[in-house]
Image 1 (tube, helix red, strand yellow):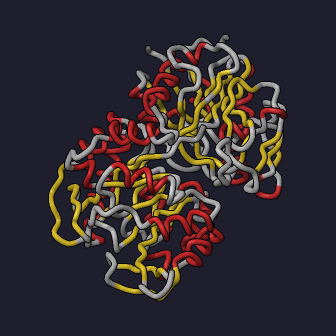
Image 2 (cartoon, one colour):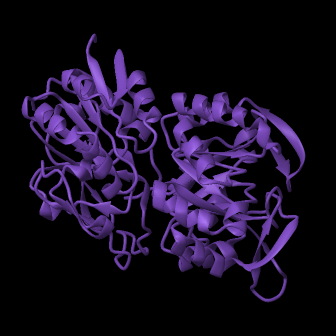
Image 3 (cartoon, rainbow over the protein chains, first blue to last red):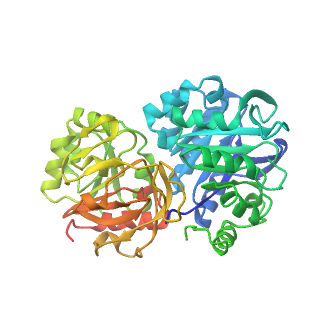
Length: 253
Length: 215
């Protein structure tokens, strides 16, 4: 049976893992290669590496870090952050990424998603969506720049459009919940999971292990992403899997 | 082991992971190459594949790899094919509007039916992406130390139906019974990615590195 995936996320700035609360107030949580290895050994099903390095000139550090992680980690590695062109994607795949996630560029240039899927295959093209509730009925919209810039794009229709263009997976982050530890936004997670035919990763807001269960059951997600609860040792990946297993969810062991 | 493992590089995607995993599994000498003489002279050959099968086969054939791989297979050199590499060994694929493949194994590659359901009754997500349990149909040296029903990492939208392939060595269930491994003699072809399948994947690669090509 296909297992639900637990994915620790490494937010990396200039080669160091950080995790902000609502993307403000960053704390240093260490070396990405060591952390990725630790998660590999601990039974994580995949690792996501989100490059938040502001300057494009410093991206060579990112490629080197991805290369180092890929040499020592034998589970899938997804890399996102600052991906703007087919050449960015090619370089990340060549450095050892198995999947590349496209966020802002999917909004400014949707053709990139189609071109990337045609060139590299849908299986390695993830579209990352940062969404917020508008507070008006059930409407959620896409945001960029860490949730600061609105786009006016409605989330469910956007998800469907990205899949039509060739996205092989969606990484759905609630900007309302990110950093709050209040749990995933189950409403939008469930609606998008039901609307698309590709896997959906729930992200943003995990504070305890029941939140992971809820994301997979009530939210209908195929995978759950978390950062702080794992980085700061609140829970281990093993504890998370045991908890999911008790809830009747298929996990890899 | 002082033997050479050649990973065929026909310009499709990243082979760094396959190479790193083989080294981690104990390979002493791994070459990633499109040089036909090096592939032909190698003690073992790995045929990876990622992306669209039409592009893969077009590049593969364009570099003159088809007769060399077939020669290597015919003289019983151990061969490991991975993912689209496995699919390329079939007779035909319905991907990209229909493609004639290498016909080492009889059978067709088909698209998952998004209207079918998983064992849990959930809607089938395509690609089939993630860790799934593999049912070993027969004993094989490459399963040494790997329990039946172990999890391996899959990522694919097309599959070989078990019902259409008499050479299936293992299956995976995803809305349908699909071939997880196809093999005969010195060829072992996996739909999953051993290089991304953690301990069981590394064990399979390590078994491949000591395999003499018989079963």
